[in-house]
Length: 206
Ligand SMILES: C[S@@+](CC[C@H](N)C(=O)[O-])C[C@H]1O[C@@H](n2cnc3c(N)ncnc32)[C@H](O)[C@@H]1O
Image (cartoon, rainbow, N blue to C red; front, side, top):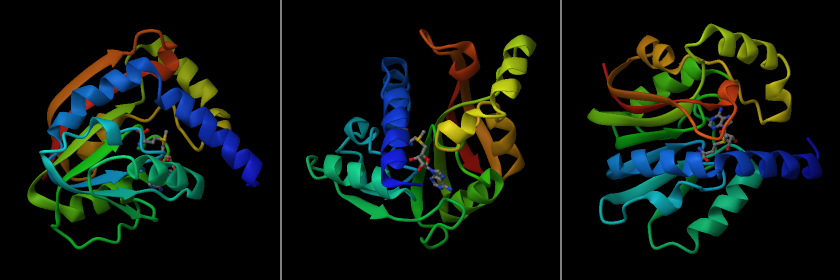
């Protein structure tokens, strides 16, 4: 991808992920982060403002995309929290097993090419009593909405950084080593239903 198209894709993603309803979702889940946190697909660092400084010791911000990483580093430099960047993919996390208290996953599982492998890696690096904190969008329960999601998903990922509209987030977690403790769902207000069905909550390694 040329530098120009990379910049456009990152602009589209930042615009969507920086919307008011999504910022509200961040406010709901970020308070559950504590200790050593691994943020998967940190993007341009939109979550960084929502960490509760006194609760977190180190944030490992894993991100494969150069342009996103560049933007995230600029944000991190303005904040008083320790953020260590990891230039890698979630399918191969360069951290020891059983080493982090929380894995944070916001609006990223939709874009990961191999979500099953990535979730197995997240489970590996989480401490036995660690938590997966998530806020994601995906497959809607209404058949009509879901039909649109499947249709649009035939081209949507090509223009949106690999984002899939129709992944079943709870099933993916349950099939790849996580037990969900808390799960809330909502159609985000002011967002088309086919891109606005959200899941958020907590899961633990099984
Ligand atoms: C829609 S953005 C969300 C960014 C951020 N999590 C947020 O909440 O704003 C999806 C991010 O997932 C990243 N991503 C794509 N493939 C990935 C992979 N295999 N492993 C980790 N992150 C990935 C993209 O580079 C992008 O930054």
